[in-house]
Image 1 (spheres, rainbow, N blue to C red):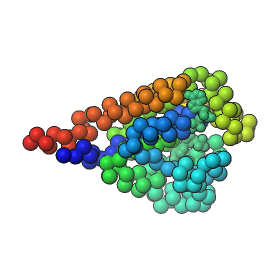
Image 2: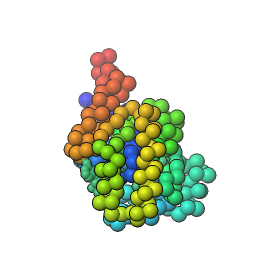
Image 3: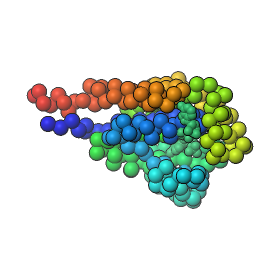
Image 4: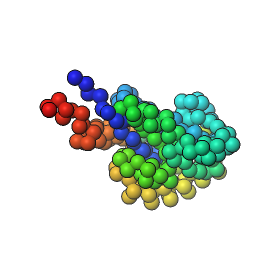
Length: 203
Ligand code: ADP
Ligand code: 5GP
């Protein structure tokens, strides 16, 4: 008897830069070994500690434009001077293998995914306060003050998109946020449309 799903769940996680998405996703992957992270394409340069092919595929603007032209991206958007996008084939292959796939993408990309894949699950993650978001961006120490200010301004606009999402998680304590994400994904997995393969045992 197999518990393998026929199709994986597509999950979108959005939230302002510095809220802690990478931090909670890293812990969530430990709790859910079947979960796969979609490695996006970006034209921004790697931050300290970031690896090509692990955190992002770092590409030139020309290569990014070619991907758009050739229809290779499921969604794409600009974010503070750089382009970011999700490779459609890679995501589809994982879903077809029955693996859940998590996209860490901003709000315009999330909207495109919602339109193209209505069965995707959209989760938004917020900080406990705007002041705490600013503290985290400064403490991370990966961006210049100008970039941090751009990202904080962007955060205000992004928060207005929360009503378009299915779930809202507050990243106050990492462990609590991870637990809530884990619960959301477990509940999604139990939806009847995701468990039809179990019914075939009783036929
Ligand atoms: P994002 O991926 O959303 O841009 P990061 O995961 O890089 O954010 O987190 C930004 C900074 O905030 C990092 O220095 C991280 O260690 C810290 N951080 C993440 N979650 C929390 C939390 N719940 N409490 C305090 N600091 C946090
Ligand atoms: P960062 O530069 O901090 O890694 O990411 C900046 C923003 O781009 C974050 O909000 C992140 O979620 C978003 N992002 C990362 N990859 C993608 C992607 O493939 N598509 C879209 N639309 N946004 C992305």
